[in-house]
Length: 181
Image (cartoon, rainbow, N blue to C red):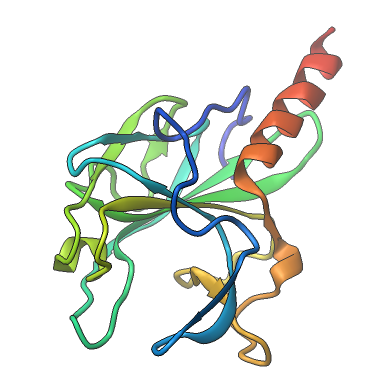
């Protein structure tokens, strides 16, 4: 377990969901249909991505995609624990390059963990537009990379184990503020 997560922040500024939003139904030739498990924030390649809170890196890997089979590209997953509530959750960052943290590393809120990868490259998983996929996972950690989509009957994850990222951060910080006052 990591130390208390403390107050959280957004991983990228400006945080404007300009791609798929959390929970949005996605249908394409490659995906069929699914629900998106995070927010896609379009950003210039090289935009810094920071850790949303104190925690421990449980996954840091390049999952290079191809034009035929898209993937995460660079993906980092950080475990966070709130010592006041006992809540354990995970922040998921995808389509990044220049991974600045390794599995097992302790990270602090605001630490630089990578950069938004250019579009249509192995580092962004061969997605056309450069963007950060950012998700919040509250389900059990199974020592596996987490998916970006929940597909019905696939069994890799449950949609109920995921939270709207921005709303989660705002609610988390409000509860923390109330606890400390």
